[in-house]
Length: 245
Image (cartoon, rainbow, N blue to C red; front, side, top):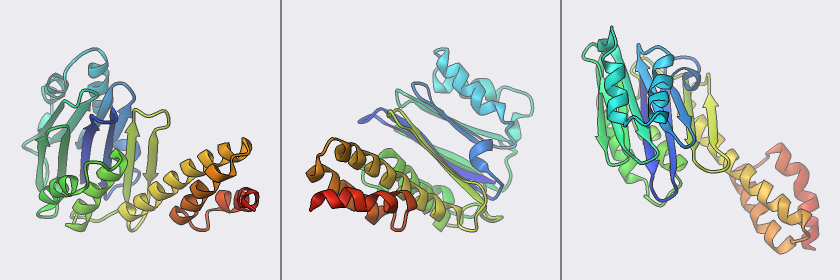
């Protein structure tokens, strides 16, 4: 009922996961990421604690292969799916033979894509979407590109309802969730643009407070482009742009 991509960016040290499903609030139920540890998804019939157990094992020094093997050895694992990436970029995944419909995973360097109850070709689309995204993009944008490719290929064959994106490793994580929407992956993309706009706004506001108009104005302009009509940015824009003149 779910498809996802987990990955690590060795250039920035960030680790993250993007996930979408036909169920309500998939971000609260399937995916988790911890700074300094890694990211995990527990899909199909996996109980909530599987993802956390995998991350706990990483925290104690286990490799992703060992963490996934430990969960796969539990009773009734045949209809469960798990993928794990740590902060060293090591990746492991498990798809039980009892997972419904088209189900599987694909593991590469620093990345894994996985899903179950899928429309045909979704795993291939996730994989291709990850590698089609420019390697220089921030990890959040690259994860979203892969997720969007899987969604465009059909995604969860039963429909669309929720999506989420988590990236940790920077001082300010990306933590975005769409709990109930007709086009959750597209809405997740909109939220990521707003997230980026607010980060630029906060940077611009810092320069504004320091009297640095030349630095503040272009940042604010870019924030307005990313999130036109945003209330917070619109409230402060006249003050910051007024400094320009």
